[in-house]
Every structure is written in C-alpha cells, then in structure tokens.
Length: 488
Image 1 (cartoon, rainbow, N blue to C red):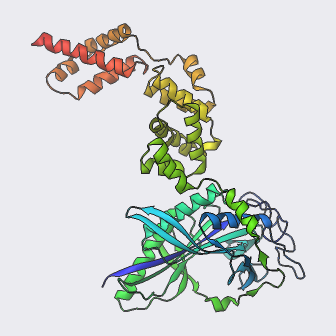
Image 2 (image 1 turned 135 degrees about the vertical axis):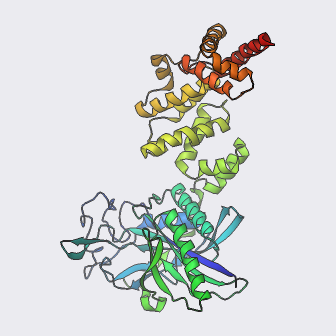
Image 3 (image 1 turned 120 degrees about the horizontal axis):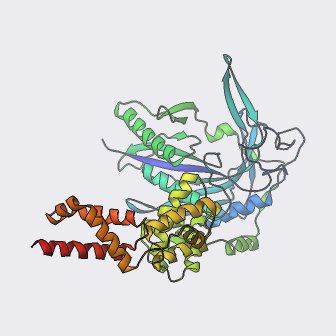
C-alpha cells in the first residue's frame, strides 16, 4: 500500500523588541547575559502583578500577518494556556487561542516540483518560556533555570496541513525565515533559539481524505535537522502501519547523534491546556487605520524582489534566489549596481555569490559587516572590465580588501599589480617559456592539446599573474602555430 505524508508546521519566532511581551524587562541575548538578570516580578510570575501588552510586539505581529496576506482580527483575546514546566514561572503561558491576531493567510513556495501555495491557519502572539540547562556532574543530575528568556514576545505562525514532503517543509521554513528578516522583526538566528520549528506529521493511504494520527517534533533549530527529522518520522510511521501497529499521538524530540526521533511526552490535547481568557488583560482592539499604516510601511518582500531582479537584471531563478534570500545581500547587490551602472548585473552577481561569499563564509561574517563597501567592490570589478588588472589578480586584491579594508586601487598601486598588456613584453615572456620547455612544446605539436593550458600557466607564472589573459593566449597560439609551420 502507498502512503502519503500530511504535514503542518508551527513556527515560533522571537520578536526583536527591546522589552518583553508583558513587562518592561529588557530583551537580552541569552548567550551573553548573566542568568536571571533580566527578570522582574511580572515575568517571574509573582502573585498580584499585572501584565501590560507590548505595543511594538503587536505592530511586529501585524507586519508578519499582512505580509502573509492574513485577515486581521479586529478584536483578539489573550488566553491562559495552563501547563506546568520548570521554566514556566507562572504555571501558565499567556497566549492567544480562539481569537488570534490574524487568520487565513498564505505563502507561496518554490520547490523542485514547482510552485506550491501553503495556507496559513493563524498568526498569534504569546510569551516565551525560560531556559533549562541540564547538568550531569559528580554523579549528580540537576537542572538550572534561567528566566531571562521568560516573557520575550513570540509570534506563532501555524500552517494548514498542506505540506507533503520534507523538501516542502524545509523550503517553507527557509522562505518564512527570509520573510521575517526582510520585515526586521526576527533575527533568524536558529542556533540561539530565535526561530524554532515544529512539524506535525501524519501519514495516510494515498488518495484517502482521512487524516492519520499525528506526532509533533519539538523545537528544531536548523533546516538540516528539520528536513532529516521529518523524513525519519514519515518513514517511522509508515513502517508502523505496514506492520499493523498504531501510530500514537506523542511529542517527540530529534536526537542529532542517533539521527532519530525520541519520545518526550504523550501529547496533550487542547482540553488539557484548559484555555480561558486572560483575566488581567482586556481584549486587544486593532484600529483599521493602524493596520493600513503598517501595510503602507511594509518593505518590498522577498518574492516581489526576486521577480523584479529577474525582470530588471535578466538573472536566472537560481541566481535571484541566492541574492534575495537575505535582505542585506539584496541591498548590497543593488548598491553595487548603483555604484557601477555600466557593469553587467550577471558579473556583479558572480563576484558576490562566488568569491565574496567564500570570504564571508570563511570568516563567519555577514555581508553588511564586512570590510568591502559596495562602491569598492564596484571599483574592483571596473578595474577588471577596463583591463587594468586580470581576473586572477582581482581575486588576490579582493582577499586583501576583505582582510585590510583598503580600496582596490590602493592595493593595486602599492603592490604593483597592474595588468601587463604590452604586446612586446608578453611576446618576450612567451618566447622565454617556450624555449625553456622543449619537451612540452614537442608534445603539444604532436597532438597533446591539453599542454596549451600548461604552457599558458607557465607564462602567467613568469609574469607573476599580471599578464593580460587575452593578449597572452593570442600570442602563445601565434608562436606555437609558427613552430608547427616550421616543422612541416
């Protein structure tokens, strides 16, 4: 029997506000701040304290909801979601349930199988929990609680069960992360837990309309883990059904070392959470004028920018996908275009996604934090196009620009890297190399064409990499042709 997966995603995105969701405590980097230093009676859950809604968090939530083409709920309601966990200081989480911030949106994704529209069921606001650190030391096992994260604004984005493959799950998550970063509401830093993804997975007989029993994989923090965990869980459920065994509704974790899902707890249902309206918060009324003001201020979104790059710059889908995945990269590309209006967009794209990306990845640096301003990269490319330096020299110059922050023109001048285009000088260099390589010349003339590249490399090395490649190639072929004629 053939089975098909049915997958929905829940994504929790920490909103980049300065203060927490319901109090004035600052939002701090959990990897930098001392534990339990950004805590007050409100986010610590002390009796008698009253929460106050963070207006900036609501604005950020509306940005995302509008970008996802959601229907904004004019009056939404906060609710208490009751469950006990050591890092949940109040014993309940303030979230939204029956009346969320927004509903009925969509996000179109592009996979290897084509375009797919994924429906968004709901977008709602809530608060994050604290953080537990589990310790095993001196034959003792214990957990440390850090409440710095407790109360940080979270936006939960829930899809309909429209996804069918692990690839679709990964692509959706990547596109949603890109959207959140374009909107400047979330850092996208999955390793720090700023974006956490939870797939709900079931399988059913192909063609059936009846949903199977679903399981949920919690808190995946990388696209690789998301795709692998989804694939594993799909196959695990299929294997159970093929053996005649039931799938049990549970919450799972992903063990990266074992590369398998592991049981965390039997899945709670909505009734177990005993949702009821938060008595300390009034309904959240969203003025239509405010919604329209936020809509008017939305930036150009990734999908729109991708289409414009293809139409305006004549780039292929893959190239535009790479350039527009991150807003900072797309901005950088267009600034280079502005600084070098006569440069071919394809050439600029190749330099950014090739050599510059290589340097950035090696250094672990973002493009907007690097040492090469857009106008300086444009200047370097102009030097290549104008024949002042060749491609190989330009790569060397780019590396030094990245390391030192110096302009390309200064590096070329200081190191005497200007390209040699003098025909007479190149003629002499070719003659010298051919005279010193009689065996290779003879083999080339005997039919080993591949030696032409070797001879070219020898001349270029003699010229310290500064020879004009076109002039050198033409002169090398001319002198070799003369030798061939002499032997006839």
